Figure (cartoon, rainbow over the protein chains, first blue to last red):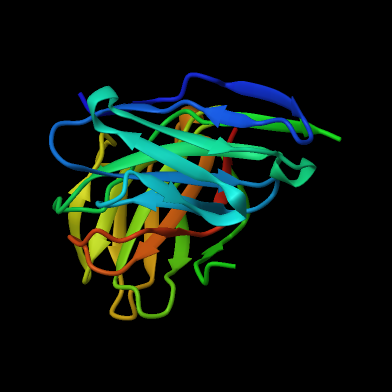
Length: 115
Length: 114
């Protein structure tokens, strides 16, 4: 079965703390991986994506993620969070070269950053 | 802003009614996908339209149907609404139904079924 698992449903951090959000996927075949962010009242925005090449990808706003194929993981990291990072974060996967761009999303992680 | 616009932003319908949601894709994009996001869940794929044809469908019943127009805008129609259809409906546009491209999302339509 195709699925994405996000281990942390709610995370509360203080400003300047480091962040790591876990994401594991189950998918037959080669995958593309994504992290999306949804700020309060706003649309889903792409943080970063992995299609191929260097497994360490850098995204916007200082976020990065590492694709570890052997662990079927794509964890999101940021060395120092800011209050403005308060949002919901979604990990997603689709099949590379598949018939559609169908994305399979995890259930999301709600991050609250305290000033 | 992504250039993907959805209307209306909020909607309240009664069980058994029908609803039509609309999406304008980003300029240059020919593919539109629809997702349902229930409270506390991640978005679930409903279906995708590529060059006016449905080319992929998720695990949703036939009362969920759609259209894509020559200008690549799209509609999602839901018949015989049920209480469980209450959710945020997201539209995403991209280029190329089969290519490895990123999808750009609209702000969604919040549907409440009472």
